[in-house]
Image 1 (cartoon, rainbow, N blue to C red):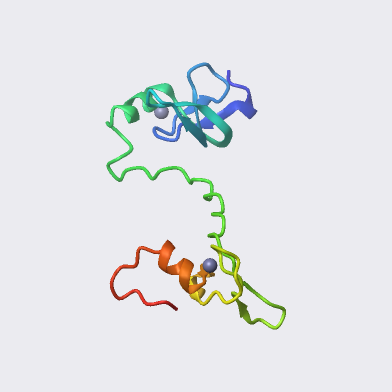
Image 2 (spheres, rainbow, N blue to C red):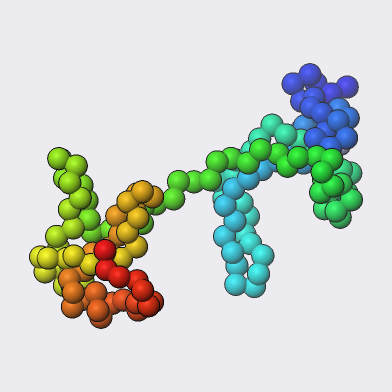
Length: 146
Ligand SMILES: [Zn+2]
Ligand SMILES: [Zn+2]
């Protein structure tokens, strides 16, 4: 008999399984650090979910026999980690004005050439003086300074 609190349906075949039994698989997401030889190390900071599958079904899924045909949806993934904001040397002051005064290259005041600026996407960009802008930027034709 499987203790009540260990009973769970297999994600694939829905048969009841023992979540603590050897060979039972648990859906786990996390970070895998790539190795030089290929592949990856063990999962770091694993996020286990209460989704289980029996070994038989997991083996079939690995072989591609189930799971990819639209019969089953992939288990819900944890939300992706927040992406860090892109680098910028600009900011908004307390009045909400967009400030980009010091050059990201040499620090001179009067940085009026912005790179990677998209205020609608909250990318404040990097701002340069004319000299640094000319040095730094591989300008595609038609990419005019902001
Ligand atoms: Zn199963
Ligand atoms: Zn400069």
